[in-house]
Length: 367
Ligand code: CTP
Ligand code: C5P
Image 1 (cartoon, rainbow, N blue to C red):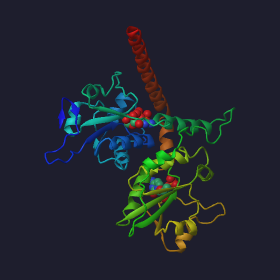
Image 2: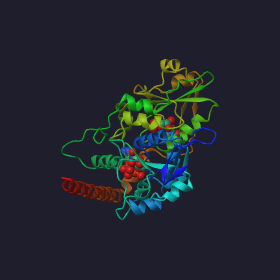
Image 3: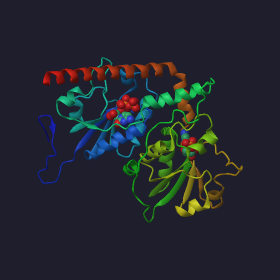
Image 4: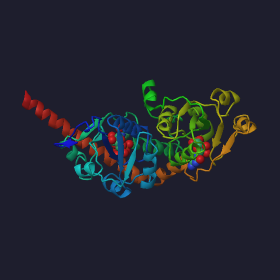
């Protein structure tokens, strides 16, 4: 029950504890492991997580045009393993009416500020009612930062920068820890009767093409155990060139682990699927999508071994999106995105400075 605007973990009449329903909302544009980590923390604060995702129109009005369409963003959020339900087209400002409509006890947001187009805190009402909780924002990643990395990449291959860019320029300073991997991992070993399916790739900027592919792979068996082999950054850079991957191996690990269709990740998988690897993981099936399979450095087919064992299958994800397409979208709308980023930062800075000033005044009054 919710009394006086406060969520309580009230017992039911039969003594059992009532389900705590948690609400999160946001743009969830270019969903990354920062978003997944927020949803993981929010889910741990209750028993059932509902995520409201804003429409393109709302985001354009308050923040600037999103990179992904609403349908794409809904699909991305739905694929995160801690999400129980999504609400498409949730309002930008979170109200008590919304929390009540979906029977949620409280809402959870990262410890950063979200402002409307008029500079108002979008969580003011729920904060005042005591139905707001905060989780730790993940340092080192944001949509704004990812857009920046892509824009940086576009600059490096159109002009020759006198300072000379390393191919890793723009790769985030996110620091991976064993704790974070444990939090994201399923922690489950394959059970007897599971079909062990292995897929490999870059899975850079983990997107809906990857999700559609993994969804199809996952539905191949009644009890699937999907292992994703991630190629190291140097390997990806070798075959993708330019400044790829946009996300480093640590970031790609978390993005893939957050997906509900994935059971395990190999961090730094060999480019060719070897006999050792197949035997070690007792792999029943190896899959690849419809995208081109480039030969290994010695010209051999990386899937020769699973093919010779008769356990290789090509999967049609029915989705043509690639990491390059995402980068192209950003390049096309470069000026709009740059303006959007500058606006967001300026708005946040103004609020931050106002908060500092308010804090100083209060301190002076207190002394
Ligand atoms: N979030 C987080 N860590 C990040 C990025 C986002 O915890 N590195 C959280 C936000 O605090 C919010 C939720 O994810 O609770 C949804 O964020 P969203 O509305 O998509 O936008 P932003 O917070 O602006 O994130 P970004 O800058 O990545 O667009
Ligand atoms: O390109 P990348 O290495 O990230 O792809 C990983 C896997 O996802 C590959 O098997 C690829 O064919 C598949 N994929 C797909 N449909 C897409 C994008 C990738 O099936 N749109």
